[in-house]
Image (cartoon, rainbow, N blue to C red; front, side, top):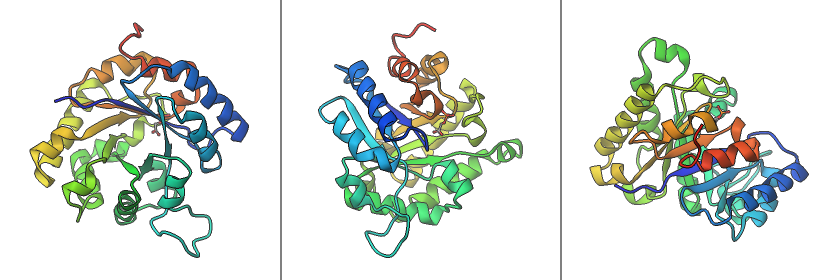
Length: 255
Ligand code: PGA
């Protein structure tokens, strides 16, 4: 089964406009000629349009970190899928654990956001993951099952052609702790079989499942070597162009 891996960088609430422009310009130079893996960067909303313009014609795609599920209206502080699409983004990260934990996002609002992304032609990256406490209580699979089943409830497989799943154990995000290979392997296999049950085996085989949580050049090669890992969602290390390019070139990096 060939699934082109995706290395996606989430810049979170870092980089001012000028800093984002500088970083994007550096990345375009570093990524010239790369067609595999697919590469994506999600800057903040202020920088999105400018960064998308810099990436245009390069191998790097642009993504947003969030959206609001209504098209337009009196929703102070929010940004719609159409606005994001028009600004030049191709992807949108939905349900990141920081959004779930800090901003109270629920599986229900996440499902609406996925719907809105799909209707606008944005490719949704649905983030899921258990907390440390849930893992300790051996609830990992139960939590993931609910996040995936509720997040994707009511969709037909045709609507989710461009869906990407990102497994990000909350305890591994920004902590320097990475899930070990057998934990990642076990979860990714579980997720693919869950997608098979919810949709079809063909659907599951075609879906990319990214790993996220303290991915860095030092562990990218071994993580990407796991059969059901189809790329990475990178936070901290995506802020540094040298680190990010070494993750993108995980096949060449002998670290
Ligand atoms: P990290 O973040 O790479 O800094 O752990 C990952 C993420 O939040 O997607």
